[in-house]
Length: 96
Image 1 (cartoon, rainbow, N blue to C red):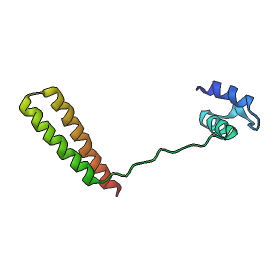
Image 2 (cartoon, rainbow, N blue to C red; image 1 turned 45 degrees about the vertical axis):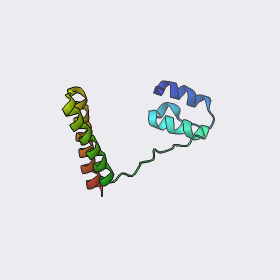
Image 3 (cartoon, one colour; image 1 turned 60 degrees about the horizontal axis):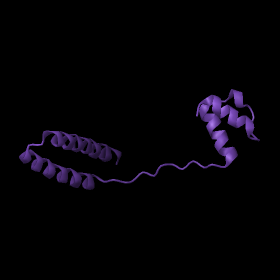
Image 4 (cartoon, one colour; image 1 turned 60 degrees about the vertical axis):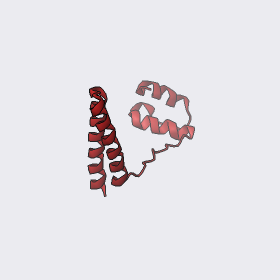
């Protein structure tokens, strides 16, 4: 929704004052509060370096099998996926 649409909704609700002076994030928070909607934060799954490295090893073996078949397109996809997972291991290691 745009800020303009949120203002119209907020004007229709009771208990919200100063609608025209609010920005979009303030409007959204006020409308949620007035309607009783709670923000549910996305749960972060904990990943450890070992599980990521196991996945990398699996993908490398798949890549070797594709290398023998000669499927360059799928090899490229696996190479990029391995690269992303290696970056993820570095980020997880830096985080603690």
